[in-house]
Image (cartoon, rainbow, N blue to C red):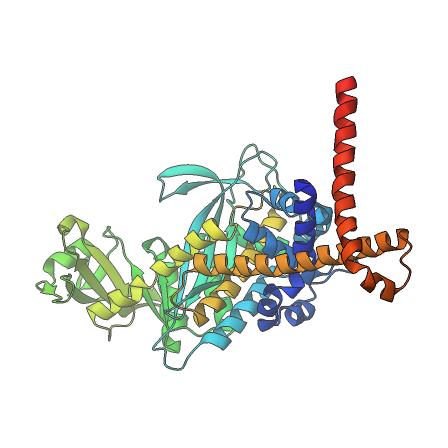
Length: 479
């Protein structure tokens, strides 16, 4: 009985998702029209929108894998349809993610905002198995160890309240790795383009992301990234392409041996810090700081070497010594030291994004060994994240996890009501059939004998169950 009850509840839950609060959320982003415009559709069978409904249910189920979620939700009959959907190499997942992110920014951007920032960072996606396509070996700077899998270079845009992803690259190594599978995709397919891009360096991927963001007309005033992305190629692009458009870079910079022009000398960051003026103290938070205007060597559009001004700021936080000093570089030299620090601190929001994706949005839920479905799965999870962030805009005091929990509970309550209605209908049919067996052929006669009929109906069901159980028990004893 328990399994039967659970099966019927899951069936009611999954068959009626379109009546729950998922449907209004999808409609608020015009997801159906976006899918039609991009040509993401199926020729027959279950629709793409219904598949996305089920994938959202898998996310809320928080299963360890897609297969486990399909089993838990009694959706295993749709396994082939979902796999075919994710394995389709022609679907343009990048444009789908762009379209949803564009809807979000146009809907929740305000004229009162001083500025918005574009953040670029990467995170690890570990994968195992010799049959995994393009599996590569990378070094994790956070764990200080090597791992097999991919590096996910993610770009996100922040309105200083919420940080949403709008583009990513599942980076693989261009070196041939042992014990892995190399797949071959058609040259005109979307996944092949993603694979070719994934073999570039991280800085080349980042610059391509920025170019696409400008082409898609995303609005941002500053670019934030970590010190790993600083190089001459990045500086050339920023000074030649972005600064003339009023877009500036604020980045952490290593205290290494890279030379910069300062006071007509070529000095590294530590030497610049030593000969720069005295430390100033911020009375509010106790941060000590000082800055210097330096010159960066840049190749202009004609290939000639030029020097462009930038501002380097040094910070010493309370409780830290001089060995723990931090340095930031900004191409906007008009900003004060504390304003530059304030802008750079917004970069932490992408770390929160990574944590939410991994803990609550099934970042590692896809166990597929193929490259194409991993691109599709991660794109869909980021789209769901953007949708939940739209709820956060309406309820800014709540966390992403709290919103997701409440959202899941509302779906459970809605589906339980539908389930009760379903059970009521089934019992009504059984009751009417029972009445016919008792030769009650008219509605008037049924109403007149309603109390006694329904009492005997439920009692007969109860006693029939008991008689069957007793007979089984008696037969078992005899055996």
